Length: 303
Image (cartoon, rainbow, N blue to C red; front, side):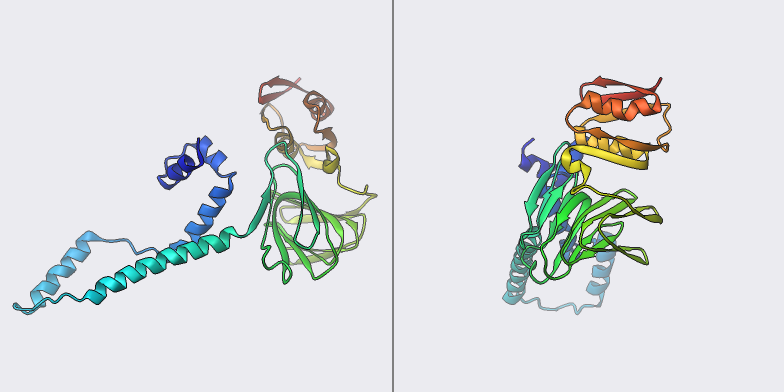
């Protein structure tokens, strides 16, 4: 479907569930949502025909019988001016809010890019980073959905904000994971300040902050120079199996169906991103499970 057709169907509210899922991945959807949100304040209140008609009748009863109606050209001019102002304001809002830089990845995709200060960012699959490039010198703040590794150039405070928690640094290397109710920050170099609810923790190299829902723990372990996902391997330590399956779907662009499996079971292990059969064996055999691949669908059963 063409871009224009997606937009028109979105405006008409006639997108199917699958079409809407695809449209949400596009920049056009993000821009339209932002524009619509900011134009809400300029929309006229709902017109109620019956109440307006009753009010008009009362006014006519009270009005003088020979009241003379005069045409005021300025009323039309004001209406035209107001319309033009709204159009210009809409264009201004659209330009300013779409000027925000958004970098994202799809399933089975990784990417990397430079921020305006030459700080480096690597994005894991199905992740998104948004930031204001125009004001980056004054405020190094970005929003993260998903998982990313950062190599930050020294300078003013660098903030990574997620729905689960926030990270503040000056210059360092660290990884942030924020998916669903999981929030994890790993420090590879320098120091990192993590905000989680009312708690603040400072991480040093090798420190890992792990949180799920309202519970968290701070652990220390020997880390490699970069997180495993940057080397095409997803690793897990005592994580609910449900999360492992979701990450597998992101890395291989497949849908997984399970039967008679406790997805709350904790899993420790890893899978590679370059061999789906080997990867499935890695996450099923330790739990005595079997799998069948049918195109873009994987079925996992208990043996």
